[in-house]
Length: 535
Image (cartoon, rainbow, N blue to C red):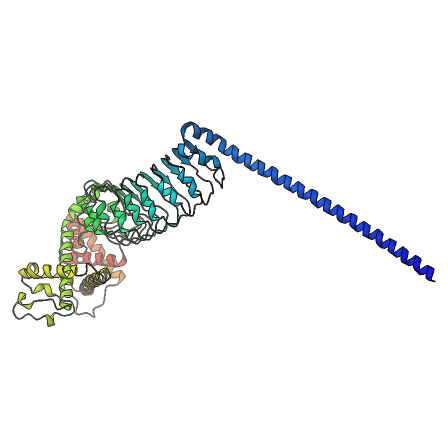
């Protein structure tokens, strides 16, 4: 039995040893296989790297040959992510460097230190998040193109590039400009299109640019001191922004020839714009403008006027689209309307000033008519009707100017007072419009009563009272037939009277509209019936 146990154990041990040897062989084979695969992977990576380097060398070879020949290094749209080492060697001899469309994302500071003679540098479409400070120290740089990158800010040292005659910053992520931008005094054009810029530093108006391309930004207003660019600015484009008004200072741009402010939120064209006597093209499409300024005829050199997409009333769009000669003739025929409007604007301004002075106790009663009391002026503050002329020139103007100058150092208080003053003027104008509307509605009601009396059998007599019934649709239709016969008998008289009545109801409009609102149609019918009554 013991012998049998020893044989079985020996057999089991031999079997175990055989299995262990097999496992060792398998592990050795696996390790050999993995080592072989790793070697193959390294060999493949080495070959790929060699091919990549060879490809890079191939991409740089021809540009390097050209650069050594004429000093222009041009390597565009090659998918490069790093700058070749030989560029540093060639740097001091280069004059033009164009690396367009290569996703470098970041460039080393030491690169631009070698560009001591580079005049033109183009790094557009390079996915750059920032530019090194050493770029702003290139002494000979005159043209810099950084279009379609990811720049969010420009450092103050950017103003060191005083020799720039070309700067292209469109399609980035800039929100403002450095104050030192004013150092670029020889730059003829500032192209900033398609950047989320919300405001400019005041120093931007110290530049001497002839062309400003500010379209597709996020501007809410143009620089206040834009008049400082009067001697040089020729073209201003600020389309697709959020501008709400055109600053009055723009009237001082005496050399401005092209102004484009399309697709904004502008409601009013200031009269001062008509002082831009050199203006040749005025493009204001897709705003909220309803009328042109009364001094429009001063723009004698204007050749192109675009107002598509605006709710134009004075003049109507059908007049504008006929061209400048027709538009000028329209203004010549409506001079009186604009003169009356300007007089009313002056009165409203005086009214607002007097109201503001009354609120602050700045009036002097000795300048008013005897017995006049400011406590009885009412909510409209009609103070201007009772003062003597000397009051305006000897006291009001000097006192008001002194009051305004007191806010020179407190911009927040000045803006607050200006807002209150503007709101008061708007409220007064809105109330005047509402009063005119009430008078007009009352006149319409009276005319309807007259027509109702005529339709009920009265010939030329008014209605019995406000409860008189209005004419029905059938009665209006029947009543129009005699009018047609009357016009046939005397065609000139009826047309002239109708035109005269239309001018009384709508001052400044000398031509009939093609399609009028329902209320205007009703008014026209009433005027036609009045002509019949007169006959």
